[in-house]
Length: 98
Image 1 (cartoon, rainbow, N blue to C red):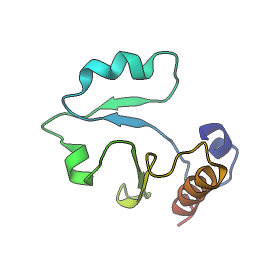
Image 2 (tube, rainbow, N blue to C red):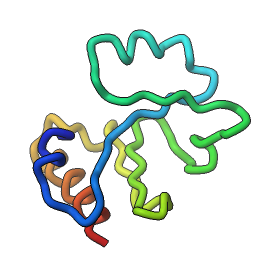
Image 3 (tube, rainbow, N blue to C red):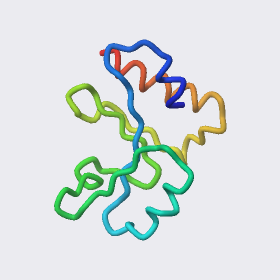
Image 4 (cartoon, one colour):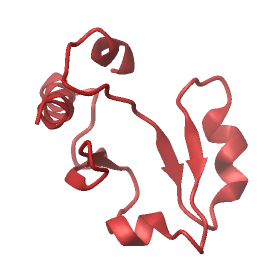
């Protein structure tokens, strides 16, 4: 999806990245192996997951002010389904064009 978004004109650029929950650091090597997705590690002091009320496999969409503009859960909306893929992409593009 990032490649498609890179080729889409929006008011602000769209960058997809992952943020691992604090306490789950042991899985970082596995999740990043062979991938190019930027990957950040949350900490107990920053507690980003809690501040955003994130749950496993949430895509948290931020606006240009870094405020939560939407949440799209990939467990509920598997991106293998074209309609789900398109729905997430539309959410990202609309948010970037606000």
